[in-house]
Image 1 (spheres, rainbow, N blue to C red):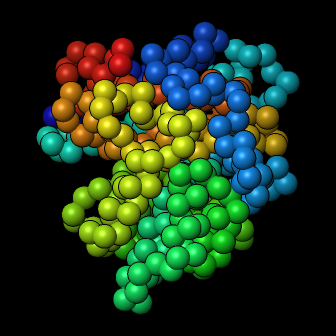
Image 2: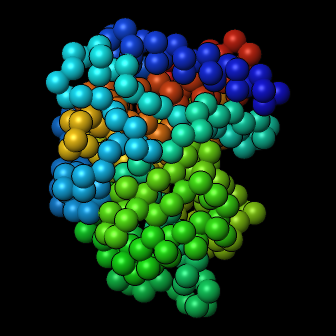
Image 3: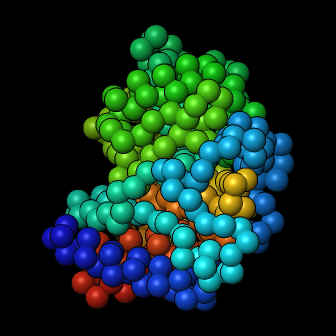
Length: 308
């Protein structure tokens, strides 16, 4: 069953990437949900491109070291450099599928991982989060505030603390970003499903109170950040998005992770991508990929989840 789902997902994502290569853009039905994507959905204090989240001065190449393209290329040429990976798990049936195993910058989806690490450390110390920690966690997840992420990144011990937590959370292909650059943490879509399982499944190092807390925050992100995997939902969803312009290429990393409800079923979805000419292009591609992921694990025809 999983091999068939993988084949359906590969077909759906292949068609999406062909569309991008042709220069027509991704126009999934949910694209632009919740906001005008090009308006900078994290435009308040701690915007995605600011702070230490892989900011303009980090000098890193997008993704796992491969060039994401030359900003001077034509639109069609730049689109050919788009990389995308998606993983999905149907919580009811257990059916899963993955397209792509390469590593990507996390941008702000790592904020869920930072919070999970903080909660694990608090559990080890047999204490609740302090009022200050809860305040920082709330704005870090709900508003994607970078200043809050900076503070909690330092609190957990930066990459060393994140990597130690991820060993317990089952993330075997995620490595914390250098120094203060938490947004340059490297991950895979499959690892992000492992993180989501730790947040949404009872079989987790996180206790029930910790899991409920993360779920509550992911379910109450600000309205203009409710794009992404939510495009595949016809009911409730919990998510965290990440978006990051890269200085060397002028191209965008755009990611989305979370849990959605569609057709009375719940799904964990992780989409990671880079090389998008604009933020809006990246959001549209991520949303189309999320819909393809749900389709892959619900019907052989691969049409479920479209048009929501």
